Image 1 (tube, helix red, strand yellow):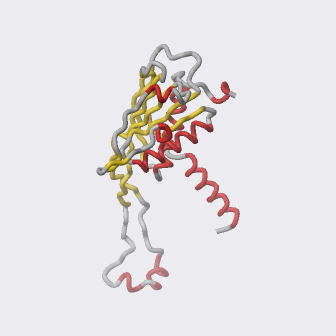
Image 2 (tube, helix red, strand yellow):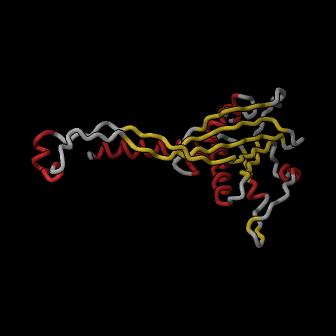
Image 3 (cartoon, helix red, strand yellow):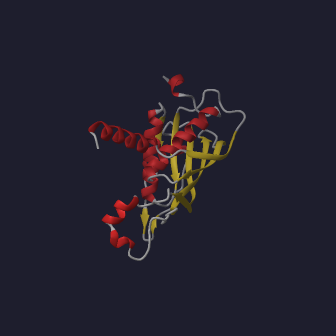
Length: 217
């Protein structure tokens, strides 16, 4: 492969990995009287007993939302995980403690379920190339002529993430905005979060929950 082509491929791979896998919003709701001053300081919480997933999701949410000009606090910082004889223990979440961080809104992310869906990947028919190929690989044709062999494709499992997202006003604890979404076959948890937050962020701006970056600069 030529050096220029290698460089182009590397850039394309980097671009695809950095963008993540886009999420599809299947339903959403928001209050009709969202505050006109929007929300600039957000507390994020991934609701899961899988601590590694919780840490990855909250770290990515914080980093990506901070890039958008928002102030972000993580639940793992304010409510550190505690362990008992049977693993992670359930914690009581205090809104007063959340408000003490300066948070104006609370964004919760709950992974409802993960599903595997078989997807057929079609391929073009494969045919050996003429008599020259047969002469070079005669042993492949001892039991019959393979020139008519066709391989239509194969099945692969796509993973689908179903996610419930809610946004609360930290002051009165009222639900302000909610959405359900699904993400098809992300490369990994980081790819899932990147694609997910881009979609959710755009929807929250459209619904008037948070302001675009340009208006906060």
